[in-house]
Image (cartoon, rainbow, N blue to C red):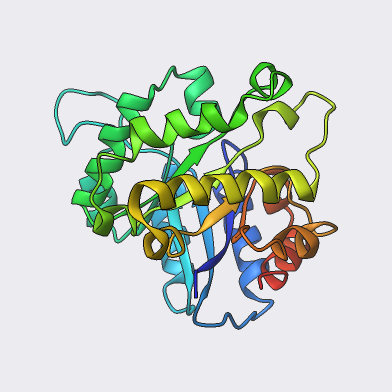
Length: 253
């Protein structure tokens, strides 16, 4: 059975004290996760050790970094190396979020390097992909995400890519006033899985969790997560509210 994951992406939000309070509120709900279920918190770098210490005793609760650098070490002031994350016990790292691609000009080639360096340090990449509005309006979303997978992931062996988590972001529905439907989410997730199957085979394709990154909330999580190819969500705004994210964790299949 594929892992089902509720991943919180706090982005650049919350003070240390607010983050600690939020995490404690969520953990105090005492949600017992099944062996195939996980809750992951992608927190700002200054909060990684605090978040890890709070989740260490919780079964199937993990902490993720929101980014890492694509070099092993060196004179890169302000950057964080994957080896540094590994040294403090971080198991996951978000790679290629749409905001990183847009605001920091991260290319598919750079993201391939980040994926490599995460895997070399026993960190699971949560690899983000997705298309902007212009591509969706031309109905070329399949071709667009296929290139993202090919250029950033398809150099990996079957064993390596089986360790990846993929998160699909409908960038065209973020801040545009447009809304992605559950049917559209399932459709693109099914395409992503079929594309992986074409490259690596059915067994590998059915091992990789594919999360939905499009405005998952308590009100729609159960419906979205019930889609056969949606294995949970990468949640932004709703993950900053304890009651919302608690409900989203409980919605895991």
